[in-house]
Image (cartoon, rainbow, N blue to C red; front, side, top):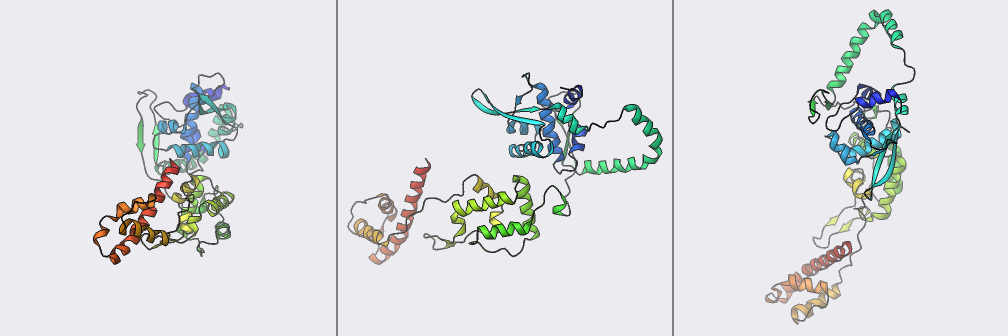
Length: 365
């Protein structure tokens, strides 16, 4: 490990107080998540130096890192680590799954030399040459330096929060300096790292799910939702197509108008706006939106036969549906036959629905 990296490591994060080195923020300056990226890298570098293993490996869960950083969720840390590894620091952050007390844990290790080569490019001038150059150009760059200072001040004011620490204070205290809110870019496509072909998105939607209503226009509101979904879950047109194909195969209930036999109403099929919502995406990815086992259609013959045996003849029920219907029937015997039969239709429908729910509960258990 190089001496330079040891110095950087000594400056990076701590257990209970967070300090974010300026070079990290400069490196990620073009990214809207610059503070989150710098903060997570900061902690990974810090814990590499604290590793008890000779080879530098240490283990940390995303939940633990989120707890150390405060104000970020476990999922956000997971996405930031992925972004660091794949986009900004490929080959720098090594990940290995190893068992700790029999439980698999993500272990990390930082390649210090590679990190330094990226954060501090190799073409570094000596202090002497920099001083000489500064004397020659000082008068020319003075105004430019003032402009840079103003830009940096504006950038600092537009940041959600800035965590810092006093190295001479109690390490168990965290100091938080609140500042302004991040400004939204005027153009959603201004971030060059994310480009979405909205027409391709629509074509894939229409080709994969022709049963759903056609989309005429990708409005500004829809673009905003799509961009958020793309960023949050690292989507691209291939993953979008796979998501829609899964719905076409496993979530057919979204594609059909469904009658509600209890209320007499009809549940309408879903649409484009529902499918691009985070609620729908997560329910599909977590397999909570898969089709349930089909419920048998109401058998009017069985219903009428059960009415005759249970209500009129006072005989015992033969199955679970009849048992539930008998319990729900209550005082049908005191009604006229016409009114009792009319009420029995709703009672039977509720009994069938409840029996189906019981079946699903037993399957889930």
